Image (cartoon, rainbow over all chains, first blue to last red; front, top):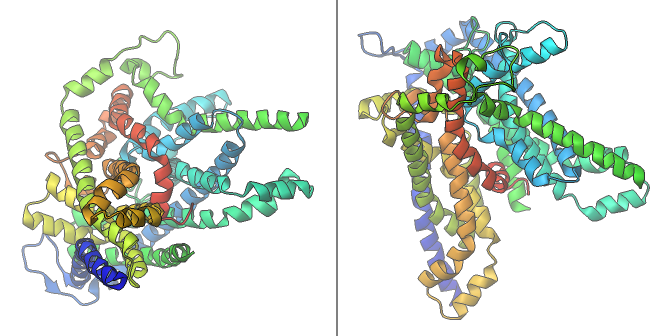
Length: 293
Length: 274
């Protein structure tokens, strides 16, 4: 009786899962196969002639292009800087929020807000209201400290973009660290305190090890999003000055929708896919382990 | 003990200072949105003696563009979330309550589709959309956002359904409830809060999506993300107007975000942090 019921349930289950699987399969395979095919073509939308098979010529051109290496380095530099700022800042914030004596709800609301701000608004608010060397808040603070105003987007455009992105992701890191901190067993804490562990020892031997796993999750999720960083660059620097803030995503956008070089953009797109897959590989393993646990 | 209490007060003060610093750009934008343009760019900025005004809001609302984009944002985020829900609810329900040996692999595979960088498929999507007449249409963006958020939604709902105690369902079944009754009278009320917060979180993700919306819309289907991008230059020099438009674009969604922040951890870490 139960066996028959469960077989029935399984058949129903398969039926219910199928639409999602088919949709995702189509969404994944069709465009990816097209990208793969386009990458082997000499195909420019602005040329009148038909697309020609070009073999690996697009990849050869990509590897010979110094702009490509610059874009990869910019991507990694942005990633490293934004990760360091958001994970470091998020950790400090979470530790502070965890010990705050009052107003925890209000503190959470304040801290989480930037995460829900759309990228175009975050970028424009920071560029104009915060970082403008003429009338921005940071210039005001610099003046108060007796320092000259700093033109962020002229002299340190990558750092400026990284700060904007880190501000958007810092709440995410803080919230996850905070969730993890609150799941730290209070009995363990009390036991450690009874054993005479001071606050520094507690942090070093109990709290930080407990946060290693959430930290890994944060780093991987942020990495996946930061590798395709686009809107913040689009509205602040347009990849410049020169190509100082052109990351891989922005380079592909330029090749695709400004130069209409279908082949070149697709070849670069595949590089982006491979980069993301390296991160994805580790992430799926980590999450898979927590699924069984 | 006294020393501990003093420490706690200092740390609490530090926490408040840090949290206010994080939220400061938003608070500042809010304040600036009520300043006349000349005051908004005044240096050093003033907080007293300002002739506070609603003029910036009036300008943004009168110039058009905003209303249409706001409507597009609501339609795009709402419809893409509903479409994703329609696919995800049955799938997550089946995987949670009738798991097979393949369920785990299927879940992880779904997750891996989320890791495909959108820019990797920009070219084919653009060409398909151009040929199908989907460029700058709401339907086109809705389709992409629904597919993009589907894996996240399946995961969120799956972890939710898993928390519904199996005994409750079994008891209902023993009481002679049919499958339909079991679904509508037992499971639905239990899962409703989870469904609601999942809807809200995916809605905020759709509202803020800024890769496809910037690349595939121009005028007709442009949501607020694209509308705000038009402030990048030279209009962005009008700080008052920029601030008012920013506040109008983010206020509802940030408020929604506050309500579903718990869901955020679960949803975006795929259950890896509890």
